[in-house]
Image 1 (tube, rainbow, N blue to C red):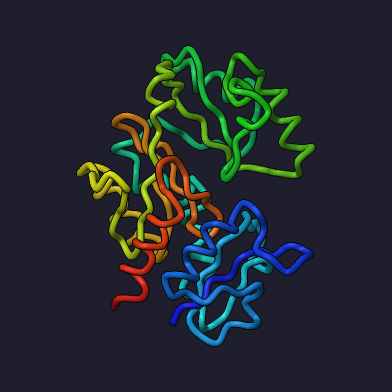
Image 2: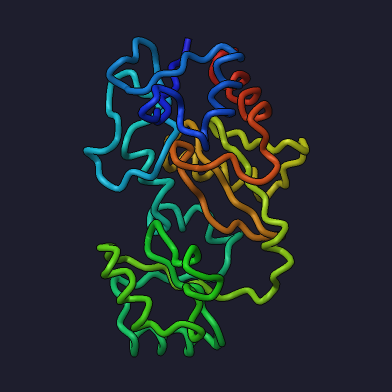
Length: 244
């Protein structure tokens, strides 16, 4: 038996965005709980991003731990695992306008996508994380307001919107990448394997656009993504965690 911890609302139900998924998991044999404190079996967590170690439901029963979570959350941690199949990227400790712009220009890039270690500004607009569409100073001010500090990833901007419209999310469970099409490109398998060996995370996601790995995210706080239906996700979780 495996327990899965989901966030519950005040009415005692799994919150809406995870409700259908949790129902499928329960039908497949997982035990659904609102808190790690109630777990009596090995447990997994599905919910929201956790930035602090104390927010992570640590326990000897946890399938993952905070260190594994962190290594799939922060691009500064996992970048070396995907460097041969992602966009050209360099890290800076802080957003200093002159320094960042000089480094971007020295590489011959006309535009750059800039994100904090775990979070971009994309939710505020498609070009809010893109320099020079948005100035380094403005980005830095937003991150200060959000109380998020460096490091920051500065990435070559790929001016091909179509590949991002077709972005795919692969779920990686115990080092094996899954997609509902049944097709997993070799470069995705290799990247997934490297991240798994590095992080020791039992579940995380790899986002792919065209022939590029865009980023990695923890399985704890990833949404299902793209074509991954609740039933598909439940099936691959069963295969990886219940049929051992």
